[in-house]
Image (cartoon, rainbow, N blue to C red; front, side, top):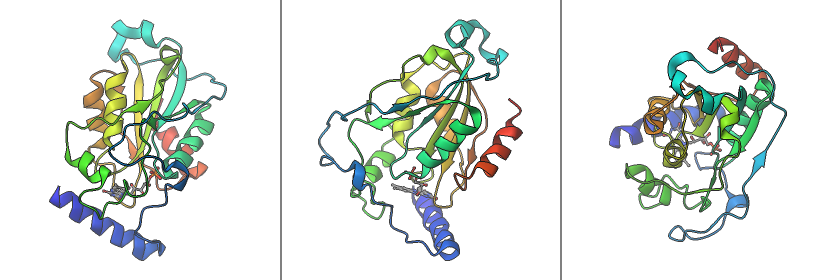
Length: 228
Ligand SMILES: Cc1cc2nc3c(=O)[nH]c(=O)nc-3n(C[C@H](O)[C@H](O)[C@H](O)COP(=O)(O)O)c2cc1C
């Protein structure tokens, strides 16, 4: 954890020097709700759909489960606490003609929860606890329709937010090709994609990437390089 903190702080210093941005997390004002100890049901399951067209067939890696992923559709699933990953996910969905699904926490992360300068903030506590599995509100309908799943999230303390592990453990990825992507203040994707994959326990998980922006050009180039 200490080395992650040091590399996070170093990465943020570089980011600040380059961009001139504040080191504080962006406000989660539109999502602010309960105190960190209260579990509340999120008000709605935010699912946006666009027309799904011609995604690649599932790989041969999970042939026995092809029937559960035979739809041939593409889905972009993402979690975003402050909007950066959301913007990237929307571009990925547009470029791939995919459906889009937001992972909404049962208990929305407030600005205080996201305070990485506070050793006792919700996110610090969760990320330090390997067994923490924050709840998710709602579920993905038509999961079997998808054979390609992009999985987006912010980097928290050098890893995926543990809510991504909740997601990974909640679905059967057999027969699906899964592609992680993240946004961050400077850190690379590291082992975060592999950690989600290992919690999923099934599926053909490709190496992911850190997206520097939500720009279409960068995202088109990345997707073209995947060879799907
Ligand atoms: C609790 C917390 C921990 C973070 N840890 C890191 C980190 O280790 N490395 C990094 O580069 N950025 C880190 N960040 C910055 C986020 O990864 C970055 O702002 C991300 O783009 C936010 O995505 P979102 O707006 O979709 O939530 C952290 C942010 C928070 C709130």
